[in-house]
Image 1 (cartoon, one colour):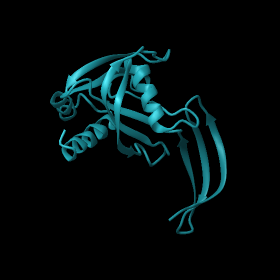
Image 2 (tube, rainbow, N blue to C red):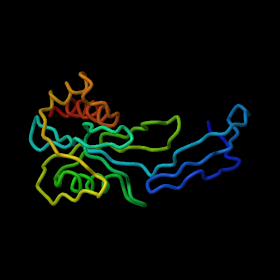
Image 3 (cartoon, rainbow, N blue to C red):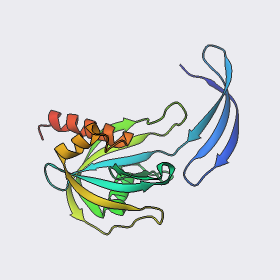
Length: 179
């Protein structure tokens, strides 16, 4: 199933994403207008500094005007592969590199109005590198017990959708791989 794009208007061009207004014909013949956020995608990392311990960042997010718990993550640069982005973001945000990487899958966080895909990875064999935060990143890095992190989801302390999805996918990966 697919729709036909008849015309596109760019509403806004941003530093990270664009907002467009697409005039489309749906599969059922109906004509409609959709406003869509065109996003380059992102990568997010479930990083284990040692067995049973997970890396979380406590990061200020302006749209929420709050500091929230998340896994390290960031936006793909133009023509950047998801794993390359994950490697870069782990080093920039947490000051770490990983010796072993496993793809957990990808998610579409808000498919009703955005084409963003977030590629999720599990990283182990961490070594210290130089942290290089972007000027607009205000965060602190924490190591948390795995069970505590899962409990933070159930108590509402972790509300970030990519983090919740990634932790559950990592749980499944670890079960399947007997880790």
